Amino acid sequence: MSIMEPHSKRRRKHSQHEDQNPVPMDRISDLTESVICHILSFLRTKDSVRTSILARRWRYLWAYVLTLDLYCEEETVINRVLLLRKVQTLHTLRLNVDGCTEYGLETWIVFAITHGLQKLDLYLMDQEILPACLFTCKTLVDLRLHSCGPIPMDGPMFLPRLKKLQLIRVEYEADESLPYLISCCPVLEELLVQLFTDMASCNVSSPTVKRLTVDFYFFDGDRAGCDMLEINTPALEYLKIAYSFCDHIKCGVATSLIEADISFHDEDDNLSARSLVEFVHVLCAVQCLTLDLSYFTEVLLSSFDLSWGSLSVFVSNGKSLYISLQMIDPVLSGWTKSFRNLTKLKLTADCRFLLKFLENANNLEILHFSASCDEKKGSTEPPEQVPKCLLSHLRIIKVVKIEGKKHEFEIIRYLLRNTQVLEKMDIEYAQCLASEEDISTLKKTISPFQRERGSAACEVAFAPFREEEVVEVEDE
Image (cartoon, rainbow, N blue to C red; front, side):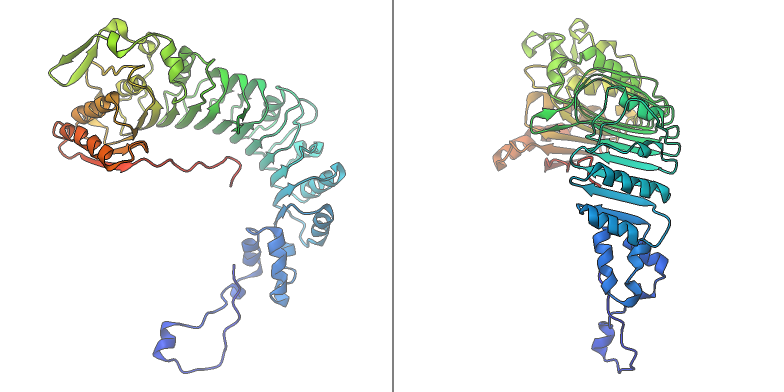
């Protein structure tokens, strides 16, 4: 932020050039001190203090800011900053410390709590012991702990106003520590947990939580996981499970769920296909679903042994492929749930999962699909009747990471032929199709399908696939 010098008050003749380039004015100095302090609250405290040299009026403004953002400061510096503050209220404390004494940390936390602390963001790189008073703060609304711990499993703990809790790479005294902490937050609405160490059981149970993220830390070959992930949050509206390493997932009633984002990791090979389908059934109330099973294909296919050569395939009227019923995967054939509310689906999975969703999501409007099944390992099994969503609702389709394989062309052809109200289909080809010849061959193969499309208004566009930017959970 730049502070401009006050403009001259002398009357001057304005030329046409000056009218086009007016003299800069210092608008910030015209603001009230409360507004300036609010602006300073978005800066780190070190930068806020530096503004004291701008003018006499600015000398102590930083000391009235209701937010302290202290990054890698020495203990003596932090102590001096706290002593020089001129207001009795401390709304927000962000503290990033690389090593400090237990007494120093407790002193700072006690100071913040006695000044009405509402938001605490604590990053302790050396896994410092947390002061007990932190867990009985009556004013705290937003708590973010990063690389802290351990979280106790018992003792005095009650956070009556806490609505948002983020636990990132923290240590736990025992598996019971997490559910105990959650149970002591009676009005908690938003919870993020990034597991850093293995747990036998990760239990998240709360009648008030509306947004839940469970992230299994995975970096440079290291990972965290648990044998059982149990979720019991009946008021939940948003659920994200990232890079899951679980043997079992158990989820209670989720009728309030609006959006879900679920992904499994390649080493998550102990979770059975049946358990996966049971978990997907719990998500049946969602309106928007992102489901990444790209690393789960081997588990799905291990439940039965099918290959293209062993399938009995029939062609009827040149429109649909039918496969004898006895060859259908017994697990997917047990799919009974209907996704009546689902309007947007982003799916990375075996083609059979896509077809099951199309059959059971009558109101689907937007589809983003990436096939994770190799044509030699799986089979495309379009339903005998065209799904209702293709006839009346599906408007936009994006098929990504196309490599020019047979099963990819089949699914594109099926969707173009049978989707009656389709407005646009985007086809994004993978990086392996690097040459112009490969891309031209892809377009020529799909071109005849466009003449057979069920919706005359449908536009088909081609583009190279680009990975979406991944944002780490600890970044703000």
